[in-house]
Length: 285
Image (cartoon, rainbow, N blue to C red; front, side, top):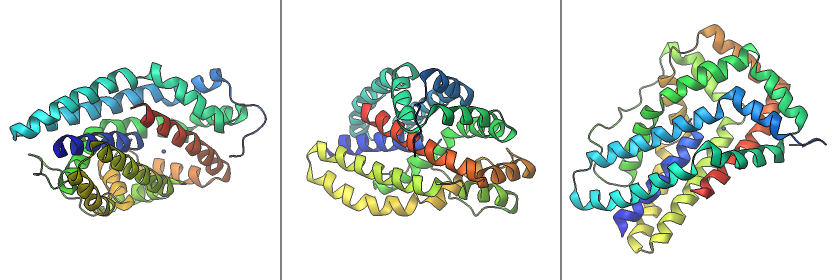
């Protein structure tokens, strides 16, 4: 059924994007579980995941309640209930922590994790994990609203009752923040890889529906999705949502921190671990 299959891939796509929302030359001694758990605690990974899942669930519930077409609403209800049940039972920290441990151990040594822990306690690390990241988590409902608006337009269904406003150009007060977001080492490459993975996920979910209309929908949506969910658009959205969270001095500190060769190498290894962790989580859904 087209309505059911299209709604399913949109749920999966949003979950994938939120797991993004929100980003190796391994040495001899692999990281221990104890040191990794200390790093997860220092960076608030469990809290971040819980908040992300809550935002996804709330956005889906809001969209379902706003649906006025009885047929579409009935079709969405069963898929939404099943999806939320899987999220509640599978996307909890106690279930995914083993996936995180295995993913990080595959790419990080014990000395790597100790260095990451040390960085998390620096002024730059404190800013990132205890000020910038929590601020971004608070904005997840707005991110979800924007994603719903884009995905609804791409799927050629009626726009949501309260679509997200068109993104205006960044103002002068957001210039330094935009510079920071655009120059995070590996950020753009990671975004492009994740978008490609999301497109594959959408294709698989529609194929599973076994209907020609779903195939036509997929062929048309991919090009539009790339145009409307570009790296520049998503980065601009982040800059607008995070405007005023950090001072110019704090942003300058983070920019300088990311320019350090040692930090760039840390981020390179960390991204590989995070990417593997994300793939494993998506596979469990």
